[in-house]
Length: 574
Image: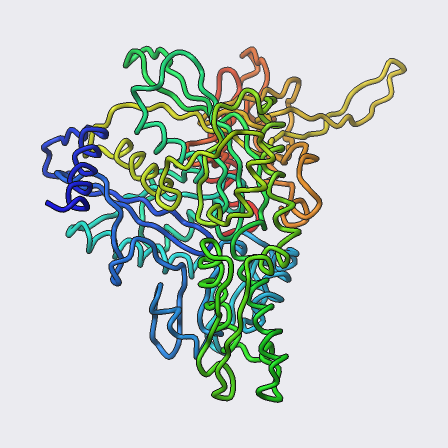
């Protein structure tokens, strides 16, 4: 056997032994999938009875697929086929992640419109969110387009597994807020995909890393930092691995998310755009035509594709000749670009590389000395300058490259899918997620001063602190209320966010809960002793905040104002 064949065989055996999938021999057993949703690419993984976890190949036999949809003349194309339609870039929809859950007046929408001027973004009159105007008759929301992508991803998984698949674990960025997570769930619902869990992509990476090193985890805490620079954003995550004792299954390995730092707009795509604009400038300077190439959407789409290839080549070479045939007016383009020029174009981006590291340390209340290793994740960490700046920032001898930078999240997510599915049994690996954004309850109550005068007092109760673990249930008690009242559920102190991140965050109010029927309930049970009204909250495995119920110590208050879907229906209503 060739060396490559031996490696494949060994890899399959290792995966099989590692995951130890014990299949329940039930007629209902079925395959499950994961979808690692990036800003530019998606990776799909599956596991089915008798087969270990695998990345599902797309129709071009590739392991990752561009997140792209082309809608034109009743034709629907996805992935590479959609990108092949550069003749009609205005019908090709990409980079949808940045628009999910956003109101039309969000600065991120205007930024997207400026960056992709070939598209026409309009306001949804009923929701106040964003719509792509495809034609006079057809408009699509980002959630609808993402739903099409998820349906396509399920098709890829089913073709690879050769059986129907409905259940999935989907990755989302750790910095996704409630509205953004809700948008992904809505997209999955449109696609007919049952979401077992939304797992943060950094957590999926950490899980993948941990299950491969189960034997190395013991009662002594090990702190690792994962630095993930993808196409659209950068995240640094501090994870603690150690074994813990459980009541049901004895001593088991556990990962706990301790700190998270991020930069929403720092990624490889911004570097691509810098290179694209540089190539456009070089072409205009060659004066092969009187037209400005920057005003031609089709030509700029070609230059972007070449810029992305150029960035990859310059990661391994000092210089390269960029070239595009028939760029504009049938004129070819050719120009030499050096790595030094590329690094100069992106100098301000490289200065931002250490930012997420410092934020992660701050949120974890830890120092770099406590971090054993910094591990690279994400395709954009292959850029030499990124590694150079990061290595200097963390002060380590070297950066860890002992994980598949492209597929770790997809493989971690599919492991979680197998763990959540009733068709498989996997060795337990406990996961303690952390809420990146604090959430609090705010309400006003009438109080009586010493002089007998009455006034309204504003109260705040912390529901989930920053980096609070989840899933977790919380109860807030409202004392001395006998009449109907309302309370707000808001995000807490977000002063740790930069001005740019805060400006695109969206509304700080999650919902206003109006409790009705309070007075009548107390009147019906005058003899019952009340110790206040209790609101029962739950942050589930997907990081979604739910209001389970509101009750007194004895009785459930009857009201139509709150149920399991209350917080899922907050602005923007989907």
